[in-house]
Image: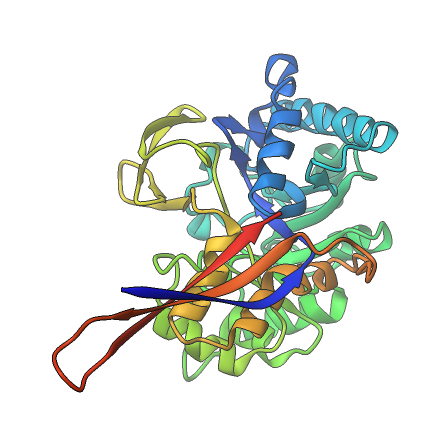
Length: 348
């Protein structure tokens, strides 16, 4: 068997807008002891090809949210004062909850969900408005639009998710300023021929970016192919949990446990709760499944997340990722040659 390596392109690192933890540390359960692990996590993510990320805090108590925000605020400040070129940058924080619809909460604990109004929103944000860059919420919980306006006025991106919103409610939220959807297809109504619902309206709107978990479990490869044909503004997310970088197994998750099997995380009742697959794997999946050509698959992890949060694309940034195809010719019966191609990313 002979092999051929072909370089597709070189790019700067990826951006992950939805990552819940790594190396055993959940971002929504930080304290002083766990804070010491953040530099190691940032170095680990950099080695995985990530230039920057939004630590994602899933639903928990306000007190614990504030503890985690305090730790992350200090980490962001430290990175700015002491830049390390070999660390992924903490770009801000993604609050995924607690303003989610109970019927679409997924793995989020119901006891910590809160009504969506200005009072509860301000309580959750506390003194950390400047580091919160993205908030996932269910828009049907506040049709007045006050909370969406409050967030947009502070340059916080509003993402719709964990929601039962219908098409009309979604159109209203987009008009009010929402510009994103959290993990498209998951924790929201399915597309329906009589009501396109939240996702259908997002697909129809050129203003809305859709995050996508492309692990082949959260959304089937066939549906991803269809989705890609319908929607231009898509970016990839890992939705990785704290066991990212650890082997498959069972791990603590708040007061529950999650089981990781082949990189997919589930609660004991079978509820999907995330992955432990690196973001770069999602790019390879799109190529392998024939969703799009390699160049466009790569853009969904490199350029698209930056555009989705209005992060300036530095054209002079070092190109440290080398994207390659590997073709292998295998001996076969006379007059027949078998050629297999795989894809990969080399991190420099």
